[in-house]
Length: 284
Image 1: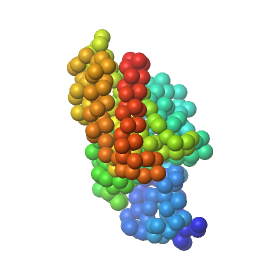
Image 2 (image 1 turned 60 degrees about the horizontal axis):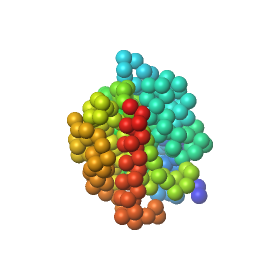
Image 3 (image 1 turned 90 degrees about the vertical axis):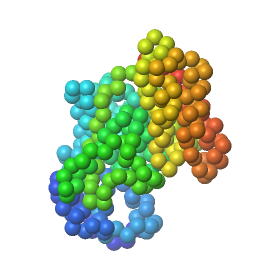
Image 4 (image 1 turned 90 degrees about the horizontal axis):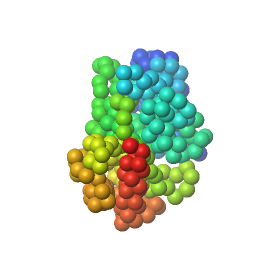
């Protein structure tokens, strides 16, 4: 299918992009990788007369790790997340999750900013950013503000980003602990039936830190606070893991679709979460 006529803009600065976005308001939309927006435009499900390509803005690209803090530009591609050796060394969880996103062709173009900003509950990075307790930098006409990933998602495709704001970067502290991202999908390149990101640290056999978030098991990413609270400070044995898995499954709220009925998705979620917790513990 062919989209409606639109005017294409490719600014070379954030200020330039904001100027166009502010000028055209609801008639304008920014595009990062485009994997979500372009199909919608082709189906003419959205009426956009001005498309603002962020690909020419160099300040939105790159990865830096300084003073135990990671900062990733919004236009950094998933391929760059995979191949950056420093990121793989300090935050291997990012590489593990990125390798499970779609296929290489998608990852060469798809960006971390587009993945987290779109608000699609099936995207992998929103849940992963909640696991990492990341913060998003949003830049708009009134300046810059920071929103925690755990506060950013309101409903499917609805986020805390204002219409005239651009998500410009993502930051989080380097996690010094065991990690895992487990994902079940029907075929290569598909969205998850269920996925879970886990960080965990142990003091002998007692959990000293944990973070768990789920992907595609609700209309937003699910941070499993109750499961975390029931792990931290406690001896981690099979019973503790079983209880944590139970709390994660209870926190999920999937809907029936082509990937299966609700009962099946919850069953898969339990298996995925248990595997992720066990693998994270093994990597401590």
